Structure formats: C-alpha cells, structure tokens
Length: 101
Image (cartoon, rainbow, N blue to C red; front, side):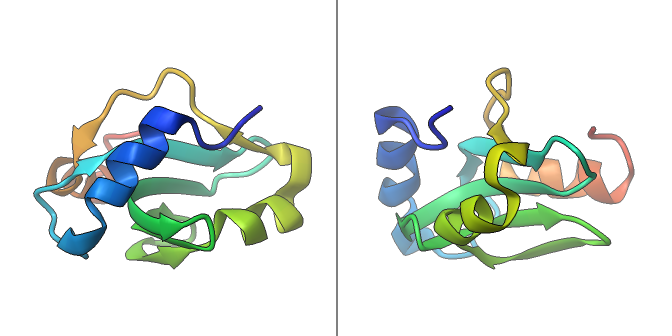
C-alpha cells in the first residue's frame, strides 16, 4: 500500500509553512496494525520530515519520518484508507479525551 498519494502529498506540503498551527487539517492517518501507535500527518517537507500528532504511550505533537517508520514497521505500517480529514485541534482534544480510536 502506498503511504502517500499525490493528493495527500499536495495537501501536506501546502501546509508546511504553518508549522504546528492547530487550525490546519490532519490529512492522513498511519498506524501499526499490530500495535497501538498512530501517526497523524499535518504537514511535510518531504517523506523524511513530517509534522503531526503521534499517539503512542502519550499524545504528542512532533516530527516523524515516513521513511524511518517504513524501515522499522515494514508491512505492519498502514495508511487508514477510511480516515476523514479533521482539524488538528479537534483531533488533539478527542485523543486526549480518549474519544478517538
């Protein structure tokens, strides 16, 4: 499965200059299908520098590399094909309240 589509890449790179602005959209969700970790893509410069929300042991905001995630997780890493875009601030609130799966 492709982690990035042309549409996701376009939306994420267009938001890159917004940094950690919580009013931007989350454009994709990635997850470890054999674990609980989730990565929500807000913006990106390229596959090696993505910015977003990460839900692992805690909910955090920061950078991650899709290239490194693929190397570590391999076929266990997937993109949620049914994920609907949401504002970062709304997702942040839902994740911290335990409302989002």
